[in-house]
Image 1 (cartoon, one colour):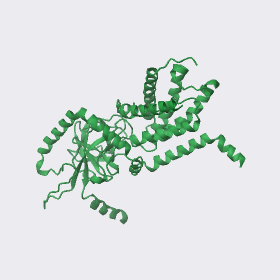
Image 2 (tube, each protein chain N blue to C red):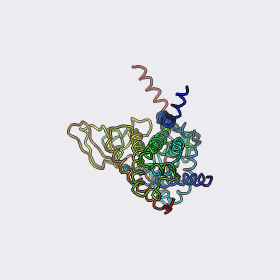
Image 3 (spheres, rainbow over the protein chains, first blue to last red):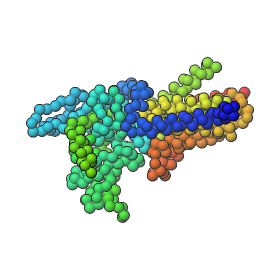
Length: 277
Length: 172
């Protein structure tokens, strides 16, 4: 017994180190993907509140840019009034139309925290579960795709940005509807890469890349970027395509979270297929 | 004693503010991500109890994690660095340093000693942090490149900060 106590006393630093390190790893693994909100709730949302205060101050410095981007977006929306289903604020407008059923509604939000230089980047926005946001919703900005909601607390949500090794967005080349997957290689926040486009598909520079209709997260045809360079490696079956992203991630201020009203229905139907096999 | 505690507390808050509000917004490119908040742990007194270093490292990690929404990442890396710090000081600091009440700094140990001290511990911290963040060896050389460049940048900022707050109290 005395030896045991002596042992514990002698190695208590190592044991403490070991315990703390174990705790860190448990937190790291447990909260890594979807339960991250638990951790953010655990720290009381202090960080998010803090960021919001900072943002309220720093937003004044970029009011001009925000205005410009909102004006250009207004102009763009005015041009597509007929089939626009945008809603302002998070009050969702629904239009009673017997031919066109509304499938997507949009919740606007402000970015309160953002990073672009890490390998796995996340964005925090100031709308959460109370505003109708749920995990696995798509997020866009006025220029293009931003990312996917991973976790939600009452007033805030975190978004796995497109600049993240775990984000894969189903995309297609607009002119010939060839499918591919948008994945970021961690190099430059203004470029990403489109993978798995078959090599028989013709690709030229400056081809527009938009979201595909395979994804339940994004409506079809949301702009993503354009082809910057492309090549075919000798032993590959797919194009290597470098995509210049339309979204400027380092200056992201306003985003829209997309709610797909028919998503549950589609997924419930597809789940039936899975249990069938 | 109380004055010391308050000084360290203010220093702690100041360094975290600096990291979160300013250094985190230095977005040069994806290879340079300085994390300078470890300077607080580097600057703790030499004769502080090891368990205190570990606990302080852990708290620093928790705060950094909640501000960068990466649960566990900074905790693990900072605790690791806090543990290594004890070993490094045992090797690199003389016996009277370990018994006397000094802090590792340029003014008390000289620039070369401090540069090595900061570089090795920051390298260990960044190595742990970046590999844990990428969490695969698939992009090994790219990750190593990021570690080396970020470490260099962090150490440069830390050295600048040390020189800025240089106190010429050499007499003991």
